[in-house]
Amino acid sequence: MRSFAAALERQPVLLDGGFATQLETRGHDLSDTLWSARLLLTDPDEIRATHADFFAAGAEVAITASYQVSQSGFLAAGRTTDDAERALRSSVRLAREAADGFDGERFVVASVGPYGASLADGSEYRGDYGLSVAQLRAWHRPRLQVLAEAGPDLLACETIPCLAEVEALAAELDDLGVPAWISLTSVGDRTRLGEPAAEAYAMAAEVPSVIALGANCCDPAAADDVVAAVAGRRPVVFYPNSGESWNADARRWTGASSSASVDGWLAAGVRALGGCCRVSPEMIAAMAVRLAP
Image: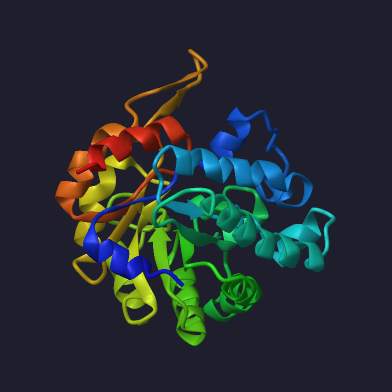
């Protein structure tokens, strides 16, 4: 297994961008509750090709399409638990197949989305689940185990909105002992539920197998806040949204793209960077240019 931690020590690592955004650009309707995860079962070639789009743009890391995959989410969508397990395993395999088509060191990072993503109601941006840490541990455990067995280079517990879910994931990762990062969807120095992000990072840093900490699906201007909250406990991973905002009157996205912020992220101390919602392969390519020696 490749060492993502060793790569971070050598130089900044470039992640991929908005996977669903690119699938939509390729012509796919992702309006159902399973989002990108549906294509793991119905159109795996497109999942593989979308990973390849980001690798071709210069990304060194593919984050798998497993963000929305869970037993409960698949059951709610009329699928089976076997379908969910098959989709989890397929997500890692397809990303690896895409990576094998490119020269150089490429990593496959298995996405572990938050509980709220399974509800398909935006709960991951609130964190007000009303579940205990024990309940969240039990919910995450099967998918973490399947993804770990599928052989990614790392698990990415991402878009996590609250301390309870960080505590649950940290405990499960401690039991698993496989390399992982934990990434909040924070607002400034707070979780989406309004708790101090520094507390989340301190808790996660107690787990030896958690090798990076940071934030995603957030404001690209938040790098300084994230780095300050991580406070040197681990290398910082940061992959925000594009920085655009939806103008309802003009019916278009406006604002600066995150690729213009790369120099500031590096100066702040970010070690792994990329993009989340609406970050295209073209934006990742612009980041690659800024990272080139």
